[in-house]
Image (cartoon, rainbow over all chains, first blue to last red; front, top):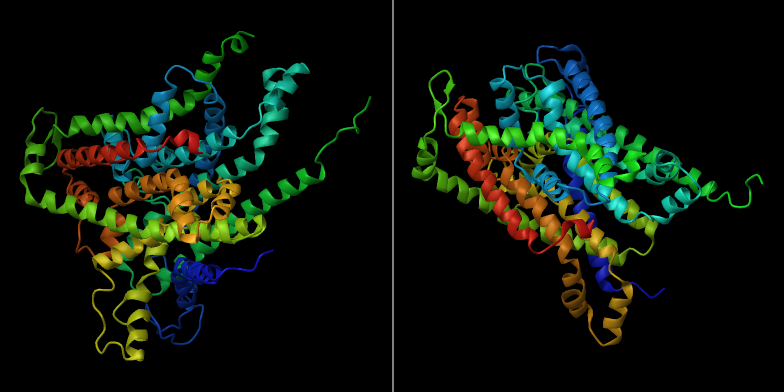
Length: 279
Length: 286
């Protein structure tokens, strides 16, 4: 290996600063959420305690934190499942041209780049004008899908751009039906990317704010609840809640990464069964 | 059997859920916003009409132009900052990190914040930027300043800082993705031909990275132009962009005028994106 040029060390320092910039603030509120009972929103720490976390569990005057957490969690799972299924179907379909495929593609891009407040406003108007009540599980659910589906589909497009079609042809030549080809050949190959799509679906929904704002109705999701708190809560209890949600997000990301790693490892182990089949 | 014979029909069937969702939650809402933008608002409700009052008011008010100018200002400054930082980080990961494992690990380190809450990440600047925050107390302990700097939190500075903090990832990811696909032998060839590091960067790497830069630009520009939360939160309600104008109207139940502003914003964004898309074919770059 050739020696590292000087630029490597400069860029390494830059990268370290960037990581500090990314994580520093979050770590700071992590530390500040252990602020002592008399402490405020910034340093110095007045003792170390779990006071603000207890506060979070006891005090319900602030709002319905746990209810909103449950709703966000359920909504995240709903969005995740639909995003995975619809993205896979869309990804498979887009491998060929079909009537309207261009229009649909541009709709997907529009869904991604449209200012979120238009979705919030438009879906809100749609429901109110047709006499329906906005609710997180109907209008909020649909509004969030306009945000998660483009990510899921773009991932699937990327996956199928790299997909080797000869696997499918081989399956077909061996007499597999289209369904068998999909079930036993295509899906196992793209499985790791589906974990990625699921991660996007869940976390983007769990943290989604702008598109849910006018579409969640009277029962808030967690980000809406937190946003409401920023205007009237001025104690470290806000940090405690922030720390808990971030830890929860990291936990979810960790689970998905573990699943991805184990699938990859298992696949590496059973790499090929050539020569092991029954004759 | 019939499905197998007609691939177009099976494709259409498979995209039908997608098409239905986009129709109900994207197309219909936009159509409705267009319609409502011609309606009239009374004190308590909105009434169907076909008048251009909302647009006339919008274009006749000087606030509109200030607010649109602000929106472009935020977008431009944020774009420049995220591009510089994002390009440098992606360049470092793609060309200076030598093993794939480390590349993936460091790349993940950069992307993890994307999967956590934006609101929390905004809140987390408070202890840094506040009057008695870390930045001010550090500067004062160094003797660099005597009185706390007031414009750190609740200012345009804070807004742009938060934008850069939230959205640099959207530059890093596509640029890194394009850089990883650059054939390393091209760089060796340039070096063999006598190019120095700066020349390789300028004449080889940057031109080949353009598609990634374009995709990152589209993300950052649209996210910033459509934002209304970051501006409100980080400026302490002192600055406004178009998104805030719309959300204020919504809060006052002025849906027709909110709709008119929203349509103008949407057209602005789509024209910007349309211009950028002329330089890149997204589907090829995925």
